[in-house]
Amino acid sequence: MNVYDSEQIVTSLKPLGYKITSSLEKAGLIIVNTCAIREKAEQKVFSFLGRLSRLKIKKPDLILGVGGCVAQQEGSKMLQRVPFLDLVFGTHAICRLPGHIKRIETKKCRIVDTEMIDGIDESAFVIDTEDHRKVSSFVTIMQGCDNFCTYCVVPYVRGREASREPEKIVNEIRELVNCGVKEVTLLGQNVNSYGRKEGLCSFAELLSLVNGIEGLVRIRFTTSHPKDLSDDLIYAFYMLEKLCHHIHLPVQSGSNSVLKRMNRKYTRELYLEKINKLRNICPDIAVTSDFIVGFPGETEDDFKQTLDLIKTVEFDGLFAFKYSDRPNAPASGFSHKISEREKKDRLMELLDLQERFTKKRNESLVGSTELTLVEGKSKKQSGKDAQIEPRHIQWTGRTSTNKIINFSRSDDCIACDDIFTGRMVNIKVEKALSHSLMGRPIEVEPIFDELVKGQIHQVSGAKC
Ligand code: SAH
Ligand code: SF4
Image 1 (cartoon, rainbow, N blue to C red):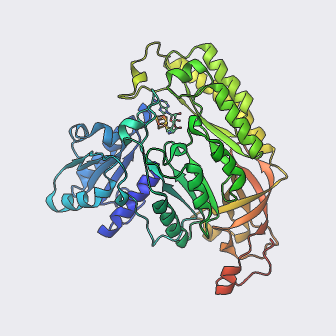
Image 2: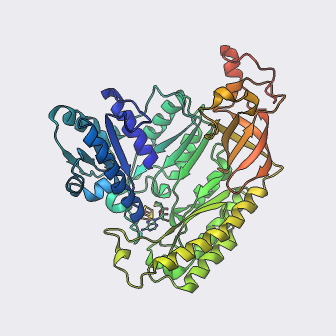
Image 3: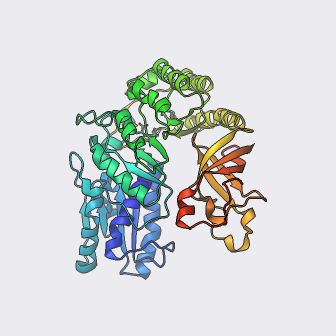
């Protein structure tokens, strides 16, 4: 969601003449987009701002702004704490950002805008129609959260849950597809409750509408709350050919007593039942999750139940975090806090255990052929192309199950060099690493459109 917000910030400032630079020293405007989900993320913001202050001494005209959840949470306190800061803008203020920047440019004033609105302000969603390089794009379908999990700061910094109208979402995706986007990830804190409050269609129905968009190849979504994962949505994995076979379903803990105190509103048994249903409907579905270790009062036995759940489900991957007190979140007032040492030990034990399953699930794909959407040259190599022979260039993409897969062009590949980006390629998996796969391209999707337009010449059939 923060990546998406950063993109919105960049797009909204383009009409003012701002362009992205990779050099902090060259920048005339620096916006720090912030995350408040854990204390560590928040601390990083302040240490980074300290570094930026030194730049401002050297270059007094530099405009420094802070946006996102920490800005929303701290508001004007940030201006006091960081004397060089020009602007603090909250999670609902991105649409007003260009106006604020203009005012700062001309009036040299300092601005705080942490106003929040109920419902959706459609002007907050802008897309860069000049950007034709993106293969995959985020699309916000809802904002805020009403779930109030007791550890979580999100409802306080992102406001109440509100869903965008399906027509607006579909139109935005159509525009993105016209710009060359092949895959969208629908975003919300709990997409499973999409539209419920406003009486719009259900999330499963929205997926079905998006599935009908011509030119769109893949659909992903995040995040799903287990309590709202409906049978209709589970069935969508069988029905909708564009819906990728991956679900991120944060469970947080394997202990019913901890889940209750987290206010998650489901039990371990219900979670396992949903996983079974998903795997019955879609046997190759990849399941990933989030865990919090060391929630206040988490006993050794609670933690064992978490490990046991991991062994039962055998997730494809997971994110695990040490519990961190957050302002306003009720759990920060709970007793029986777990020591940092204990949280660290539990985190290591959990990650060690999962490592086995991540590897096991990746290894189970060796020998299979995975239809992959290629995102581009692998990061390690972009920028060095001049020295690399085309057949040695490493490409990267994702399988439907959201595994990263890297590959090089086969020696006898007759396809031209830039053929892979944005294409569906069948890749034979040859090797499983701990967090990615390596393979060999076998077949590129038919590329008739481009052939007709004469943009691709070096093709006879689409075999590699
Ligand atoms: N809306 C999503 C999660 C958003 S926050 C959902 O409900 O799944 C992303 C993850 O951060 C959460 O799933 C949780 O595992 C973690 N998290 C949230 N608050 C936390 C806290 N106070 N301490 C540690 N981890 C936290
Ligand atoms: Fe936070 Fe819970 Fe809402 Fe997710 S569902 S954003 S964890 S309050």
